[in-house]
Image 1 (tube, helix red, strand yellow):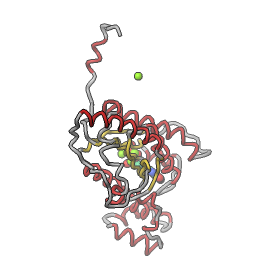
Image 2 (spheres, rainbow, N blue to C red; image 1 turned 90 degrees about the horizontal axis):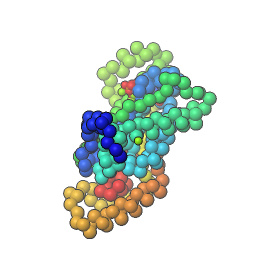
Image 3 (cartoon, rainbow, N blue to C red; image 1 turned 30 degrees about the horizontal axis):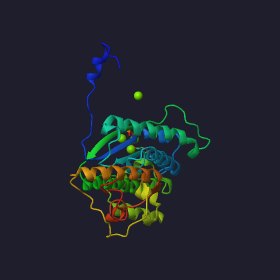
Image 4 (cartoon, protein in one colour; image 1 turned 180 degrees about the vertical axis):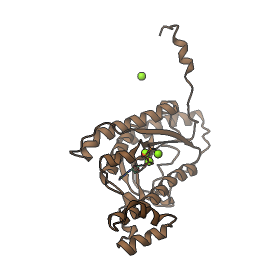
Amino acid sequence: MANSKYEYVKSFEQPDVLLPNTWIVVRIDGRGFHKFSNKYGFEKPNDRRAIDLMNAAAKAVMTELPDIVIAYGISDEYSFVFHKSCTLFDRRSSKLVTTIVSTFTAYYVHLWSQFFPGVPLSPPLPSFDGRAVQYPSVQNLRDYMSWRQVDCHINNLYNTTFWALIQIGGMDAKSAEKELAGSLSADKNEILFSRFKINYNNEPEIYKKGSVIFRDYELVEPGTAGEAIEDDGAKTTEQIKLSKTQEENDKKRRAKARITVQHLDVIKDEFWERRPWLLSNRP
Ligand code: DGT
Ligand code: MG
Ligand code: MG
Ligand code: MG
Ligand code: MG
């Protein structure tokens, strides 16, 4: 390529490579979805069509980007986890984030009519922001996932109670808000049960737990996981050659695996122990 006198402008680009050997989480979030959900009359507190659409778009993102090992979604947000060994886009943050955000948004719009038949999208169209965060250990990554799932639980219990007070109890929003100010989980469970005969435990898992998407292989019995989770990374040339072939095989295996959307507890050890491939050294 010939150099032009303009080429120097390239040197203004700032590097944004993420640290090696860290788990990368790209979290996206719908822009102004409070307004967006009202515009399209999303059911309160949860609209199954809206959640299924988020899940379908996230599943499509995972299918297109086999480097993603797991994704977790609630409300208008989704977190995508890249394996710590991922080298996609040389780990450049802006490339990873913008690719996820645009792929997700494109699918959200593309799939909209399947989930909202007869409800045409009109501007302002849905858009999403995104950021990348790096986690140096499996524990940090699991704590991140737990943080999002606890958020899901807290928000859903609040919203379920808030909307029961309004929709079944006939309260206005202000009084419902006042009623719930300072209340504990137990209080909300009690309100739901004593006033509305709703046992929160029987609410759908998809609303209580959020959605987790991953590649499905055969489950492992808890306590029998073969592979150690952390390793120091030092390898001989022979091991590197071997791991290259391994990498190729893993890539093929990953591309073929069934991607599943489930509503499981990702806070407890069991989820991870039964699926050791998710956080193993080899993606
Ligand atoms: P942002 O993210 O700062 O641009 O602003 P928002 O408005 O997107 O706020 P955020 O992301 O904190 O909250 C998500 C909003 O989306 C929240 O107002 C509730 C709404 N939303 C998400 N899923 C559902 C649903 O299934 N049903 C209803 N009714 N609303 C939903
Ligand atoms: Mg926000
Ligand atoms: Mg939002
Ligand atoms: Mg949000
Ligand atoms: Mg280009």
